[in-house]
Length: 83
Image (tube, helix red, strand yellow):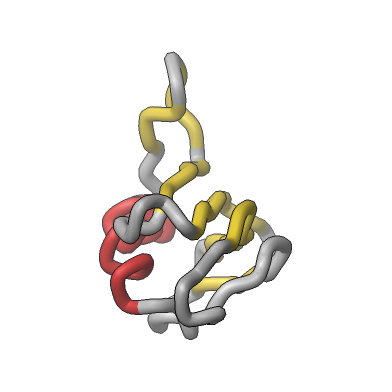
């Protein structure tokens, strides 16, 4: 089964939920993330978990970068990881 590693690359979360450098592994269930951030990244995570690739700049890749919808206070990088 595919796994997606999420790394918080920038954190100025209003509620203090996320810290820069935090990592989470997503395999099948929603990780302990702010629901607004999860709602934003879920389509990309789902695509990667199911073997898809995403637009990444001018290329296709098995990773993504996203920002929290709350003024981009939290940034996250997601990528496929192997066992």
